[in-house]
Length: 238
Length: 238
DNA sequence: CGGCAGTTTGATGTTACTCAATTTAAGTGG
DNA sequence: CCACTTAAATTGAGTAACATCAAACTGCCG
Image (cartoon, rainbow over all chains, first blue to last red):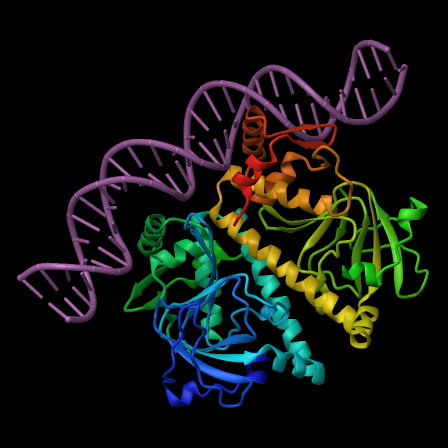
């Protein structure tokens, strides 16, 4: 059971659109607070919705759309740390930290929910189920980061991309019904490049190669996997 | 305050040597259990002291010596995830998981302490200081892993090595008195290579280059940093 | 129809890997 | 203390993987 499903009642799936937008880092997001401790907001594709080192009393959950958490270096290089799907916390460990140590951008149009940190902590103290959900979620975050370290440190370009696709596919499949191995896939090659530490040009070449070998194909924002077994042989860690 | 300092009373610093050794994965480590929930063990340099996927009721803390946590791929490649120093948990998140998802090897002769998971969980439930120490330790683990992802994904060979050295230096300095920028440094170049995703040969070349530029030098298991400012310019993330 | 963002392709450059030989350092036993 | 052994580090030459630069192409939208 995810933490989000315990903590958050997100209206977006029903209402469709919320109407409020994030502001710049200087002006905090304007948003409605239906219950005092919880509020909602929306952002357009490409908008930055969390800023590194910005203190915040809120913990955010993605309700609809895709986003990504990343770390930007002084010279412009950026590492995408995780693609966020509906139900994902921006970062579970943020519950225990006063400020984010990462940034978040919307990949598609998104809707998010912010929950007061104090509220989450209070619920943790009161309810052992929530306590466990938070602990598991943090442990999972560490496990994922650890796996990604191994991927970036040891795997070739093709292996890294295959890993990323498989990893995303399994997470998407956990939330959507997948028919005929066709997955919604809003990433640009630039995003893939920044996630696996390659250049977009090289990502394009690897994709061409995978296409030629009839392992996968892309069209209209969908990823079609024709040879899952082969993709797994390339990109699985174990 | 570290968790270890709250939870563990380690006799090794006083007694010098404990006398018991880890066995192979099939036979569990023989060790004394002075208090039922806590026990101690020692291992020689190079010995494996934790096995991936091996269920364990104990959480381990390194008491003396150096060790490293790593992940090994089927074809032999290995990623070193973290070098462990005295006081480090093998992994804080292991508190919440039935089995390790990584392996640990002793780098030097080491002494470790094992604590029953149930004991730690009981103390967490009872004492909010310990609860916070555990949460912070887990958050720190995630932060480190996240930073390492960025390092491996974005930095060049020289930058990665400089980062690793600086990171290690700051951690060593937190436990030892450092005089004249000379740090104890028991790693072989193979370890550095496996930690930053390079070959030992290339690590050697990068070291030669850093030496030629009079940034650092190595001798008798000690790392001497002659130009810290330059090393930081190369290897710091922010 | 023109413009723009994203992708593809080709040519070339750089970084890091591989293989193999050599040197240095670290033990070990006489 | 010194030959002998062994592991680790260094060096060189050749190669593979990936980056860079620039141009051409595609689909999309006004």
